[in-house]
Amino acid sequence: MIQQQTTVALDGAAVHELAARLRGDLVRPGDARYEEVRAVYNGMIDKRPAVIAQCEDVADVIAAVNFAREHQLALAVRGGGHSGPGLGTVDNGLVGDLSRMKGIHVDAANKTVRVEGGSTWGADDHATHPFGLATPSGFLSTTGVGGLTLGGGIGHLSRTHGLTLDNLLSADLVLADGTVVTASAEEHADLFWAIRGGGGNFGVVTSFLFQLHPVSTVYGGPMFWPLERAAEVMKFWRDFILSAPENINGWFAFVTVPPAPPFPEQHHMQKMCGIVWTYTGALEQAEERFAPIRAFAPPAIDLAGPIPWPVLQSLFDGLYPAGLQWYWKADFVTDLDDKAIELHLKYAERLPTMHSTMHLYPINGAAHRAGKTDTAFSFRDANFAEVIVGVDPDPANNDRMIQWAKEYWLALHPYSAGGAYVNMMMDEGQDQVKAAYRDNYAQLARVKAKYDPANLFHVNQNIVPGE
Ligand SMILES: Cc1cc2nc3c(=O)[nH]c(=O)nc-3n(C[C@H](O)[C@H](O)[C@H](O)COP(=O)(O)OP(=O)(O)OC[C@H]3O[C@@H](n4cnc5c(N)ncnc54)[C@H](O)[C@@H]3O)c2cc1C
Image 1 (tube, rainbow, N blue to C red):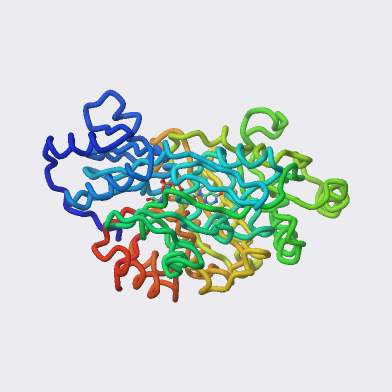
Image 2 (cartoon, rainbow, N blue to C red):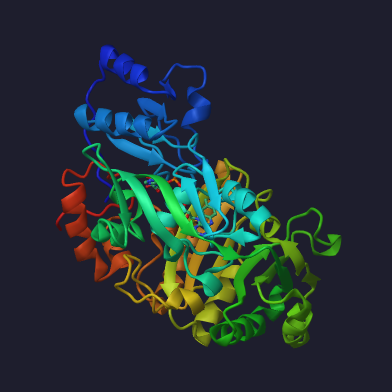
């Protein structure tokens, strides 16, 4: 369970002192910008922090961390604000909002990029694309670099260049006692191990240094088939992706086709299955590579083709603006057997709203190069990350879509590897956090006890110190 720290009444003089120490703004209930600044991506989350520190730099982060600790305030750290359970905010506590810390420096010669802790993947792609380089990230450009990296980072390039955390070279953190350290393979190696999967449990990352890869214009985009063909498409995709070359990535989805271009009108609001492809090999070989896929079952809608990387990364941004209601359920999957596929089809037919979806992301290929204990991310033997998400603009549909997501997950859970990707869980309690880390949990708890013994950083998928 995510621990709720007791919050003491804040005295005005102390708040003024914090405001004076910050270069950024301090926003409190009653301020004109409070409603706008307290909002996070998931419209289902409605928390009212006592203080929001809009940090401009590392000094501001240190001030915010020290203030929360000294005043026994629950502390939430917000990167991109995309957390499903709203872990970037907290009732009555202090939010360290990093969204103004978006500085990015590309070192094209060394193929690295240094990214500040509040940046988003869209900003990162914008900075690296002119150099023909990219870092593996996710599937949406508005997601935060902070939360996505610290929990794992599954995306279009996972099979090709590994998880995002596999491309992390070092990170600067403000620790619970307000000191600043660099974590890398050479410095604070235990901390570096823990932050690669252990989420925001260990400190506030003010800057990340990532490996870049030559990724510029790729061949990618979605293909869709009618739901009646989903069983054969899913089986074909499963077999294909388990042995495909690492430069091909394709994730599977159940969707309702949005009633807007570029989707052909005859398919609007039709439930379909799809695969979203990314091929980073030679573009002139792409058509040949995809010919067997298209021949197997000609897609009803085929939008795959040459596409600049940042465009692929932001393809779904418009469909999923901030403020929608989101409810997530997830699991890792090792073997996607035919029985599980049958069950998937049953729930695909019942997609409760237009935005609701189920994705299966392949995490084999390059993501399998690291072993189970090499980083805190344990499920290196799983082949897929499954996520079932009920999404809708209207809170009136929440009960219906939450019920669908829970029932779907319960039906498929016996076919899973037994734990879920922390970045796609809601607040599901300590047992689920432990299940997400399996044998790595004990070491995470030891590292937590060393760097954050009082559990100041507990607004996250919490690792309890020393447990
Ligand atoms: C629409 C959508 C699409 C998504 N797509 C993907 C995807 O393709 N691949 C994928 O892997 N995940 C994806 N996710 C999940 C995503 O990785 C998590 O929600 C992640 O936590 C978001 O990071 P954030 O910084 O935006 O979130 P926040 O809500 O700001 O933070 C989430 C957690 O990370 C911590 N945190 C954030 N930044 C820092 C920092 N700098 N230092 C210390 N702690 C920090 C916070 O304290 C909090 O506990 C998606 C989520 C959404 C809502």
